[in-house]
Length: 223
Image 1 (cartoon, one colour):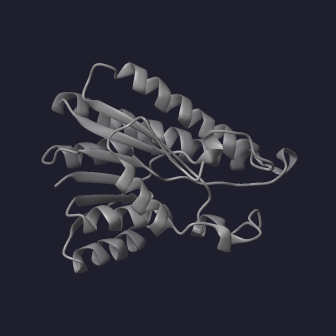
Image 2: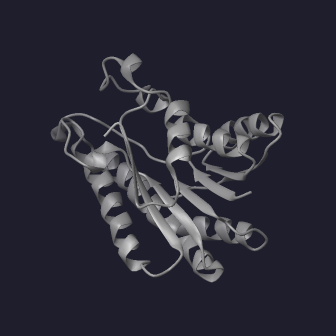
Image 3: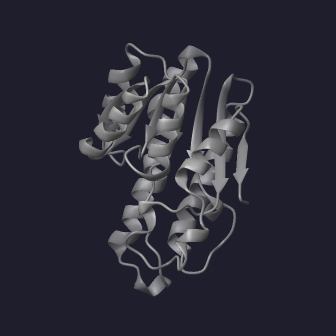
């Protein structure tokens, strides 16, 4: 059994990953801003015979992240951190407000860095563990009307690739996951995707991620 920590675990892919890892007999720690959706996922995991713990946290605040991580690792080794939380705002560059740009970089980039920075000393002390960053194909190539979102994902890609090099020679694994768009609440407030029916469900993608994850540096789904 592993102890798995997942950000953005109340909805979408994070929820599906939590359910998948919980179903497979792991203890899942679910991180999100709001307790209610996390508790709903926890109840689903427990109803299926699994183990889960909800943790509310603003991942854009390093002090809060560090405090929350420390409260967990005092008694529990973490085997896998999945940095899944993310947000996207789309449109031509001149339509973005400064707040839009700040929000995407705070969540997608700083949130990933904060979580990884907080957990890494524990993984080093343990001598093993894995950090998986959910990046998407937006971290591989530019896309129309996604300039700032893509920029944030390229940043996470660079962060991940740099830590792969930094951790060479250790038993700590860094993994970047690149997948296409999914039919999740991520798209509820935008018309950027015309036909969501052509997208994979988060359950399908979560299953593929879990099946393919063996600690390698990259996982590609619908490249």
